Image 1 (cartoon, rainbow, N blue to C red):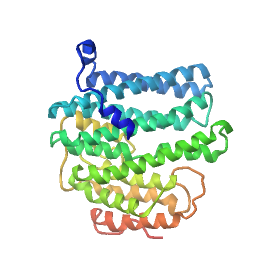
Image 2: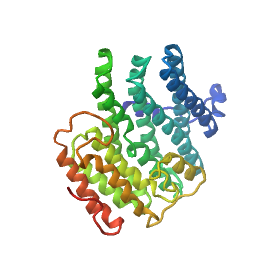
Image 3: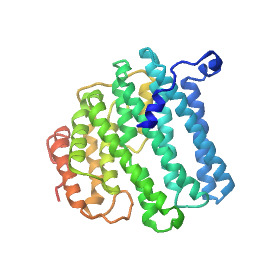
Image 4: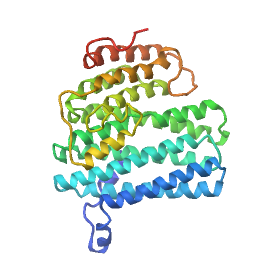
Length: 349
């Protein structure tokens, strides 16, 4: 929260001395930073696979610096919002920066137990989690300033970015459970896992309190039901169950008209949401076409848990998970069944 306060305190307009920075406060500038960050992230992954320590360290530095630059520019744009149009531009920039943080976070957590530069990679995870959380907070604060047509899309972006995916948690859990981490970074990676889990849970609470009413009407009930059940029942979600819950949210979002079912079909939900935002259209329909297809996805997501396995691939003990799973199952049957046609989605046992 202190970091966020510092960001909000950044002056909204540049002084004459900083006039050169004004032209850089654009969506195009953020896109350039994100493109460079994405290229560096891919090169980092390749360097780790090839055990190229020097290259990995260099590309990690580039990926982090370019991601941070995209974040700074988008935050300046948010601080300078004066009209609905400038709010939409800021939302576009923030979405690009937030999505890049998400991409970088998934890459870092997937690489931390493999190859060179492990200490640097591990040390980069917590700042990346914090950067992503910062973007989510600012996007949420921007919602009331957006044109009504853009609010449902940005609300959906916030939900997808904050609670539509738990890959980083699953990756970190697997790294710890695998037993191959150097002893020097086990403690740090454990802290990263706790922070990543808390970040998603905090995002869920934020969505429930501030974002839910601005989501498209057709998904407010199922998403609200999932969040109420999970936040009201569970103190801390284990990685496998957290992955399942975020997968449910992702599936609901994936059936939105402006996403085009991307998530449910294994596509890029952010691509669909960002495309809707950039196109200036928003869906606010009272029903969601094709939402019945969620049934198969939900069943697949829960099948591993029902069989006693961890759907996310983690191997940590799942002590006391039965009550959590039962709660999720009850939620699916009682909340989503109405959306899916009135029947029970999956068996209770």
